[in-house]
Length: 351
Image 1 (cartoon, helix red, strand yellow):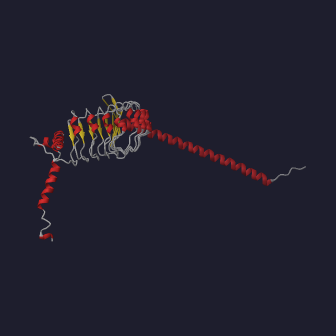
Image 2: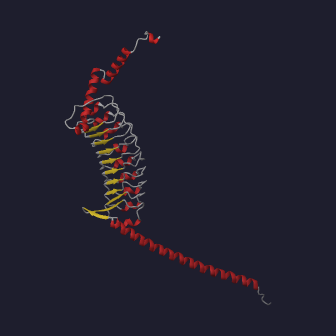
Image 3: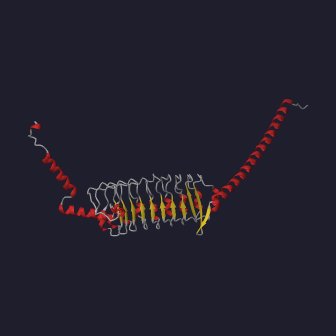
């Protein structure tokens, strides 16, 4: 039987084959273009990384044998990954750079002693911060942080922690009580309503600033802070102090300006190491004056200071003895005077 050739079918197969070959060639070309662009991009990234690394190296200085990265008033909203090549750094000082985040690769800088990133725009502290077991100072004031990670409690060498003027921090994790060497803590200008339990349990704390928060009362357990010598509580909503504060035998400075204190508690007279105290701008009920000082500056300094506190307490004790305080006596005598000055209701004027 003679073979039958279908010309139309052969043409279709040929066209299909040629189309596949053309598509393959186009795919190969596109692949080469992508590879070329990738290579160019990688080369570009390498050069950019080298340029950034070179810029960073210019910011490194050696002070007393400590390698410090110092950048101020330059825009570095993010830190490049190439920075990990400088993991031998012992201190970062980055101020007013607009930095928005602490990079997670901070964990690679295990030799860091000081991390000073104050006055930036940082919103979060990464959990990797806990890997910095040699870190002694963490300064993050004037940022936008609202939460503190529990992993910060793993920074076992931390001695100084500053979180002031972040404005939205209202809680500290209990794990921070593991900071056995922490002596200085600054929580000024945030949203705390009381002294956190983690702070009360810090065994070495000496200096605490919780001014400009929303504290209305102090915890009765405040006597746990036996190493505390300086306590700043200015610009809060405190109306009274717990008696347990008298157990802070090492307390030498107590600042309570701009609160709602109506009385200075008698228990404060048992704080024999107290050297500086300030109750200025509180609605104290008793009006106490001090003898004039030889120097105006001394008078101004002592007006609401230690002498004032003791004079106030002595006046309170007198009130307790007589059963009536000067302000009450004045108020009573004033009312009696008014009573005698009022015309009698039988007078014609009232008819």
